[in-house]
Image (cartoon, rainbow, N blue to C red; front, side, top):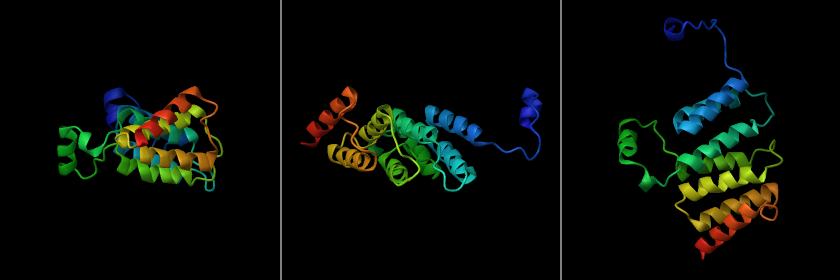
Amino acid sequence: ERLEREENITIPKGLRPDGTTHLIMLQAYAYHGHLYECLDVFNNLLVDHPPGQAAPLAAWRALFLGYAHHGSTPDSVPLHSRLRMHIDSTVRPWTLDTLEPLFDRFIANPGIRYLRNTFVFWILVAFWKTSGRNGVRMIEGMEQLSKRFGPKWEGSKRLRKMREMIYDIAR
């Protein structure tokens, strides 16, 4: 009704968003740092996705990019966000506590067979930011990625450099 009243856009009753619509919304929410809305759309995408098929890689990429751009450690969450978290329990910051279950689900997803180096890079940046540069936790993530998708470090100068930084921090 609001769209029709304010924008003169009529949406027929019963019209449901498709996978493309979900993906666009997911990417927009992740880009703008709206984690709760992003996860809600991601869950809808999974529900509406054909059984036995993996969620689109672009959806996972949007989530990890959201963590890479908006990720923080719990103690570095801005005061206004922490206050809002106490008022509204649905507000969840882009932290390691919310990243790890998503990452575990991603790793366990049998439908994903291959990752590009840039995708691996953004996953590592997400862990870098949310773990507070915890080298040990990042090495665990790298090992999980290597075990699941094979080592990606040899073919990418950027990934090799990041790997060296992570091992230096862990020492």
